[in-house]
Length: 398
Image (cartoon, rainbow, N blue to C red; front, side):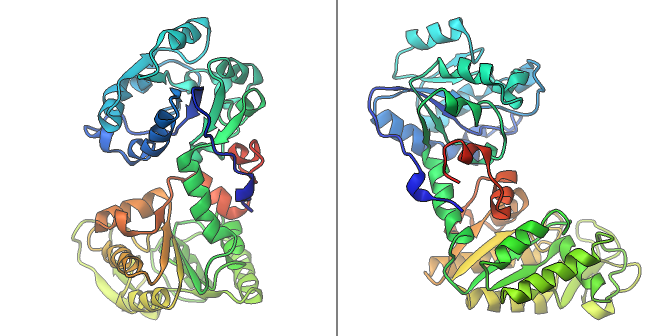
């Protein structure tokens, strides 16, 4: 459970601030300055600028495993950050040491300082105290604004809080404020739309949400396992094996907590996954042995919309179909548009998270019409599961 009363927010003037962002973006993109992860750090940068802070950005890109690499150097973010923030960027080609400290001292506070990839040091992922202490020597205070990394027990996320006064950044606070509306006490009726391929990796999430939600709509590959458990033929559809006990446990637990489990009644099926392939709408009890379930059908979409319409809170994590391939993106686009419509009309609060879900929402062109879209992937899932996140636990937020 998130205790927002324990969240410390920074508001002191004239300090040197080391702020940890998650700028793990695809560096080969031609429009990096428009990347969501870069755009959403603006709020913290503006606040720190108003406090006359000397700002030092710390981040990682990729998984260099403790080895320096030009391909993963944060030097490539100088121009995108300059464009996005409208600020001069001073890049320092290391992130610890006397030379780094001296360069920070010499840099005018009107410039934003960008340090090199902290994962070039293996000590970062080892949550090494010595490395954390070296980072701490660069600044007066530390701010964690990297929710998407906060499930990692890494030096720049966890250990560093032992050595510097530590605060919660604006993006991290927004995440906690909004996700708290899902995991603590959602306004009911509340529904979760849960996709993904493996139920075994999401059982704790589903059970934790069942305690809070009025209904959970299971879709995507996960739904196939449930349908097969119920005795339906699912043909060649993706399904997880040996999960009967897990599924029965979910049904039992949900019933005990008065949470309705919703499964597809019909599907869009095809013989292969291919753009514009011939496909058919079939009832769940009519799937042939050589067919694959690749999206939910119109009856299921209609039922899901009715459930959404009767809810006050909607949380979406996982598309209902193979949304990357037409025509199996139909349900994802329709659901995204419908949630956005009701949100804009003030009828529901809508929350979403997870890379594929966000991509489906962007495909529908309604990214800015949800109440809140989380930046977290693994961090979001672990928070939903009820796990301790090192980046939050180190600041006594959880």
